[in-house]
Length: 117
Length: 108
Image (cartoon, rainbow over all chains, first blue to last red; front, side, top):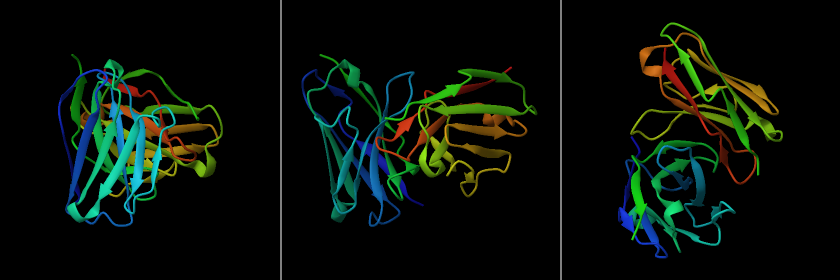
């Protein structure tokens, strides 16, 4: 059974960089797309982007200037960096797996990241 | 970017009743690349339906999806207590992937 687990700081100051890592267990990262989706408290879901296991990313244009994703298959991990954060970036961040860069069939439990001074 | 509008915002029904949730797209979703997710409080979304009408393995057959083009529907034939949750549609026919704002299905 594939499992994903997000990790990283739960509090980030405005203008700083949010960095999260997702660790994948119970399966190979090969041939899959690995994505990030976020959900502000009490609101809906926003797709941030995904990265193919070989390293090709696809970002949401609304965040593209601030987002970088990377993958380290040897460690069964992939990562998200979001620069110049504001309070609008406060959300639960989910990592998830996609077979074709389309729908997400396995999700992490989510990590709440609060942007506050 | 394709905008998805879900209706109603909140649906109040009783166990045993039939639920019909709507998802309308601002432009045609190519190849019916439309999915539905269920999210319960404090949990990650769970994929129910993909390709507009294909049920994920392990999802009960009371859940069904239909539609094409710009109009899609998720139907729950006979509501069970565990079905009360928030439901999101998602299109993956064009980038960026987008989600609807959700329909809250609550117990009447």
